[in-house]
Image (cartoon, rainbow, N blue to C red):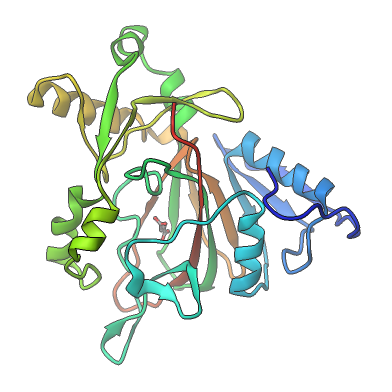
Length: 295
Ligand code: SIN
């Protein structure tokens, strides 16, 4: 799994992994991500990520380059199609922010406005994403995560059978104009950008490539239709699945603290940004790691 050279010579850190009380998530204490991670510590973090789906690293004072280096231990990084919100000098970092400087947005302020799994519209959606808090509002700005293994496992048997073998289209442009009409963050896309986000087709139920667990893999932001069904049936089935996939018992709400870095598994969870009042400032740096072709 490690994409970097073997790192065995660094001292181990005293990592304490504490599962959260809800349906997913664990807090990682005692780990300083500004220091290189040896292979044994990396293996523990990797295992915890697979087991808990969302890891919360507290009090990380790290540079964007250190976030990139840690993210790269899990695979190649993906560059977001909205190049205008890349961090200067670090194209791998997407700035997620509602802040404007000189009247111009410095980041993507409406990232996560609908439930989604990052980059599900790509042939290779994201394995995982990392968000590192830079500036937090005194209220609001929370991020919700929903466990899609639990959502799949709880489906009625007849619905599971109906979904067997079904595939769905995911399209980056599905809600682009709707978001554009209500926010300053969505520039018109060039023909090259549109070409870069051609729709992808994925199984409605995917099998996690590392754990073998099944998960629902449709989301209200990007999934447009289930192939092989009439339009009205596809729409009502998707709406039913969207509602079933975010039942309260599958959710963890992350209330951000200064220095938090949150690392989630897009193959196991969906997420949603709850929103920040316009008059408050919020800024986070996001990296995304390329995953496999879902099967
Ligand atoms: C995202 O969807 O990556 C952003 C989530 C957030 O801002 O809380």
